[in-house]
Length: 265
Ligand code: MN
Image 1 (cartoon, rainbow, N blue to C red):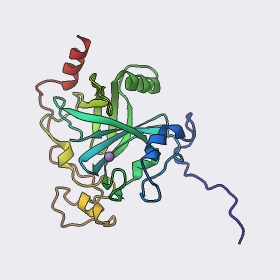
Image 2 (image 1 turned 60 degrees about the horizontal axis):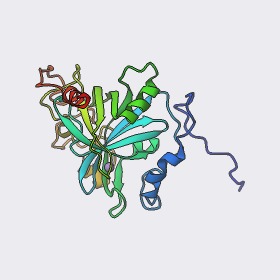
Image 3 (image 1 turned 135 degrees about the horizontal axis):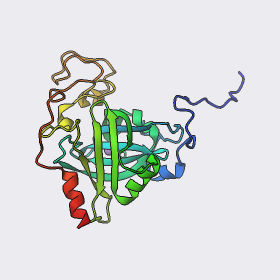
C-alpha cells in the first residue's frame, strides 16, 4: 500500500483572508497545558483558518459550576469569558464575566462531554453561535477590537441566532490576582428586552436541539417530540422564544452608561 504523502487538505471555507492562515500557536499554550488531548475530545487547535468574518459562540457548560462560555474571535483565537449567569438582554443588568484562556477556533463546533476529572469536566452545549463585528468608532474595526480589549471597554455587535445587537464587555478596575473580571452588558437597541432572561429561556442546543441531559447521555442529533421545553417542534433548536416579539420597554437605565459615568469620575 502506498504511503500517504500528500498533506491533508484543510477545509477552505474561510479562505482568502488577509490574516494568517492559522492562529498563533503560542496564544493557545495555556489552553493546551490544561488539557490532556488523549483523554478529552476537545480540539487541540491550530488548524483552523481565520475567517473574513469574526465568529462568536456561547457554550453552556455544566462543569463544577454551571456557566456560559462567551467566545469572540480575534487574531486567530477565541477570546473567552466564563459568564456564570449567562448573557442578559436587559440593559439594566450586568453579568459577571471572568476572562479565561484563549481557545482555538475549532472549539466553536464542540458540543459533548469532557470526561470527569479532566479540566472543565462536564457537559458542553452549543447555546448560541454566529458572527460578530466591532461596535465602536475606530475606522479600523480590528484595531478597534484590539484597543477595546486592552482598554477594558470592548464594544461588539452580535449576530447570532439567539443574541443580536450591541453589547459591551467592561473590565473592572479592582483586579485581584485571579482571572480578569469583566461585566457583560447589553446596550439599548431594538434587540434589548428589559425584564427578560434569555439564558434560561433557551434550554436546547442551537446546533442539535438537544438538552443538556441528552448531550450528557450521548444521544445523537435526533429530535424528540416529547421534550418538555418550549421549543415547540423546531428541530434545529432555533426556537423563537416567547419573549422574542415583545416590544422594547423603557428600562430603568443602562448599566453600561452608569458604569462608564462612574469610571470617568
Ligand atoms: Mn467553561
